[in-house]
Length: 351
Image (spheres, helix red, strand yellow):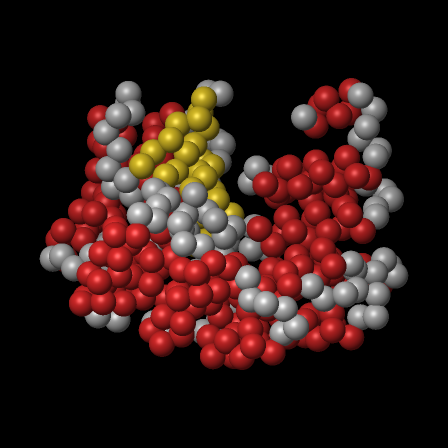
């Protein structure tokens, strides 16, 4: 796409350039996105927004905030999209005080009208940092009706911080707004499971089954040699599945040598610990990683996409695997890009 744009003479168009910055960022190539951004001699608010949003997706929170400040210095004033991106940065980095600062800045900005998406981001900022009660208060104070996205954010936060009381309230709202979304039932079930309330887990999962609501199955995909390869947990149909499982077993053997323990608390089934380990072992992103290791040259990143949030065990697994194999592994889940390198992740273990 980039070469076609240059050949057609559109590379100087700021809106085309902004779309290209966004394209690079969404494809996991944040360095190329920033290189293009800096190359543009003249910039409008659209291209600044694209770059800030790109940094947000890749957990480069300080870089995004620096760009926001530079916009002010250049008297290029932010619009509603800019505030949305910078609040998203704070949400995914756990920057509560910074989030409050930007939200207050928005409230005092006479040129921008706060909308429901800004409030949704602020609910996310508070909830993700464990301030679920404060997020609940903001839901009641705002001049808009809470959306399904807001209730979903609150429910997800209640799962992470085991707030069963608020989780039940958020779930009831979601059941009314999204009766066909089985993911909400699963989230509530996971809240109960995390607190060991197995009786309510059984009841919630039975309700999910009886309601006919659909739960989106988890899957991961990776591109190799011009073809996209899709994996689900316990995948068996891939033509190279034997080699994939052998490679995965090799990785686990290396992990055992450094005494890496499976995070069994990430599996929320009422089964024995050894069964939990087996269930976690063949998650779709782990299979995609094994496939990437046997299929892609050692000098290019392994980029994996996932349709659900990466679990804690897979996140830990990716960090150690990237260190052992000396590869750059990039995983894009529903929240952001995770860059795994030398035993650490760009998200700082907050996502």
